[in-house]
Length: 47
Image 1 (cartoon, one colour):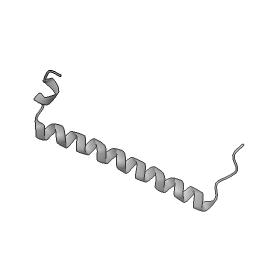
Image 2 (image 1 turned 180 degrees about the vertical axis):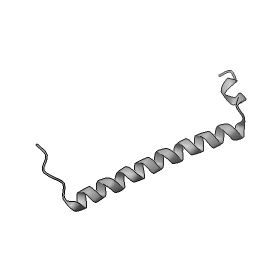
Image 3 (image 1 turned 30 degrees about the vertical axis):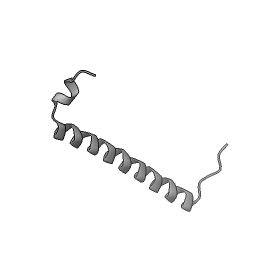
Image 4 (image 1 turned 60 degrees about the horizontal axis):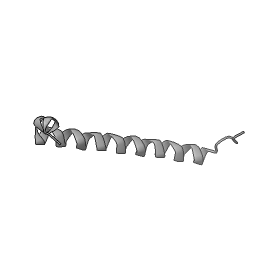
């Protein structure tokens, strides 16, 4: 069984989740901007 989290551990966990979500949003944003700049045809090109 896990021990209850202290206030500092809870705050750290909240920061870690916020950083992870921010990183995911950034990666998705870079992907979308890249696809938009290259044009939609880049998805249809042969491999």
